Image 1 (cartoon, rainbow, N blue to C red):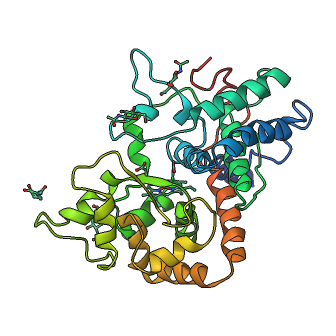
Image 2 (cartoon, rainbow, N blue to C red; image 1 turned 180 degrees about the horizontal axis):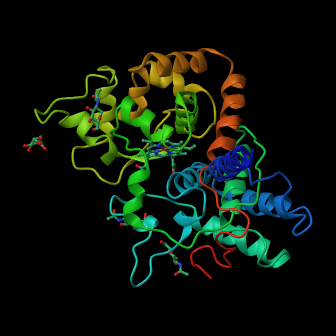
Length: 327
Ligand code: HEM
Ligand SMILES: *[C@@H]1O[C@H](CO)[C@@H](O)[C@H](O)[C@H]1NC(C)=O
Ligand SMILES: *[C@@H]1O[C@H](CO)[C@@H](O)[C@H](O)[C@H]1NC(C)=O
Ligand SMILES: *[C@@H]1O[C@H](CO)[C@@H](O)[C@H](O)[C@H]1NC(C)=O
Ligand SMILES: *[C@@H]1O[C@H](CO)[C@@H](O)[C@H](O)[C@H]1NC(C)=O
């Protein structure tokens, strides 16, 4: 009987441990209204400060949404993307394949506004999650609830940016990458829809256009009628010109991205790759045909999921005073 009991308690202990680990991984430590007592106006302050920037420069919305994605895919949503390099460490934001991230000044300004009201309470990574949401809504995109309570990490390592998906990746690699973050095939297609807004550098498609297999050829998964148009914008060694990922509507958040991908005009190999798998191509068709409502609804759900990747909660990490530096 005693032995039986011991087994039961061991089993219980195991269950509790599994539950704890699972909790951390799926972000159950987060909750809506986390700062209700400690910083009740945080969401209003963030919204107003973000709006100040977006009204003047709407294109920042894309950059801010992307910053949140980069934060979450490297080391979990812990503000690591916001840290500056130091004399003995190269941080994520200075990763050698330049991440071309923008919008850090917005996060710094929003953080300053929040600190003025409630010093030392709200983490930089929570602020980034809120700013990404508000910036998206301010350009008439979807709106999603943001459970809060993430804490800031103290580590940011340039080489860990390898965790980010590559624009040259095929569907197998993309699926595996997202799965490693707890995101499924549907999340992959839905979140790729963020490319309905924003711009990319010509350098990202140079190989696709001019030297796909090293024979001076073009990627056959690109619409041949579209290639001359792209070539007229992006010359072979051009590293600086920017082009919209959803041409003609790269400033509005809509489901046009999926129509573009379906026409074999997705800008990156990773966008085109969504057509090379049964499941993902079905989702591309679904979102391209249905009213934008379906895409918005699913985008909201996937963003909430993404915002929970590997978060630090409770006593882990810290609440940074300045987002570019650990305390
Ligand atoms: C599926 C894998 C993904 C790949 C391979 C990828 C890759 C890229 C690349 C290469 C750029 C252009 C960078 C440049 O040349 O300046 C870009 C831009 C962008 N990405 Fe992604 N991305 C992916 C998923 C996501 C997700 C999940 C989001 C957000 C939820 C996102 C949001 C954006 C936005 C908004 C831009 C435009 C940024 C701007 O205009 O400043 N991407 N992405
Ligand atoms: C942190 O780095 C950013 C760019 O990477 C730079 O603009 C900013 O001035 C730096 N912040 C400080 C306080 O040095
Ligand atoms: C990296 O990005 C910064 C800011 O956008 C730019 O000034 C710098 O030239 C870039 N570096 C490289 C190596 O592309
Ligand atoms: C996808 O890319 C990976 C990594 O580059 C490669 O190992 C794999 O063979 C590719 N898969 C297919 C089906 O092309
Ligand atoms: C195309 O790629 C091949 C193989 O990588 C390389 O030898 C050649 O110089 C490239 N051509 C151009 C125009 O860059």
